Image (cartoon, one colour):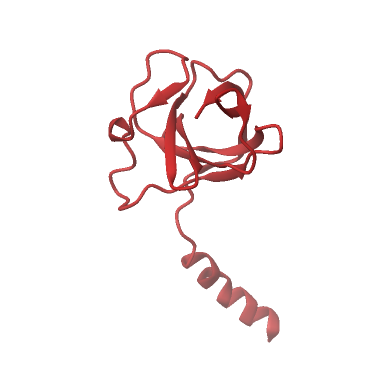
Amino acid sequence: MKKILLVALTPLLFSSCTEDFYDGDARTIIEGKIVYNNIPLQNVEVNFYPVYNKVKNGIISEIPSNEIVYDRYQDEPVSISKTTTDASGKISIAIPRNEDTSVYVVKVTRGKNSKYYGYISQYNTNNYYVNLGTLNF
């Protein structure tokens, strides 16, 4: 009786699942350093967002927030990963790969101030690894 009930309820478990936007277990490793006036910034929040911008080169630099194209179906942009800098201002994180886009933007927040850096794309990703270099806040 328990087996029959389990088999009957199994489809209900999967019917409540939401759509997954990520490519299985594929991850991109991202490393870099955040500084202010050449001084490493400690405990600064760093978020990563999938975006729909057209990228033409592998340069990662500060970008204006009004140029970023987020998913048009979402009211607010959704961060796919978040980390904080260590005592030397460094970050090292693995972010999930989005199925819809291969372009990402980095948002660095210090107190009430935020800056955006882009773009992480196929132009600067090598074997699922990106080195952001040193980002000046």
